[in-house]
Length: 99
Image (cartoon, rainbow, N blue to C red; front, side, top):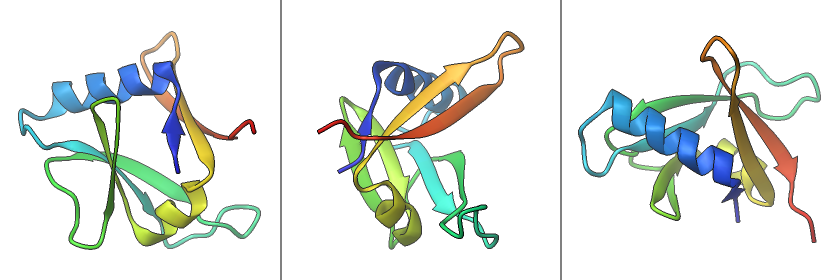
């Protein structure tokens, strides 16, 4: 199951809280039509008040993530990390879980 670093949890919560007042809002991670360089799913994120009907809802320490089918499969055994650069841009990294 997908896990989040403390940084990712804080950043996702901040993004969601700044962009919507919806109590059940979360960060939706979804696949894009273009495959990544390795042929796997290329993922995008957006803050949304509700999951799509077929999304898997993952809640980690109060942080809600909505994953479409491809994202759920690609992230099932991963760790989501996040950071903010000097200009305030958020970036996400997908890391392997340490056994």
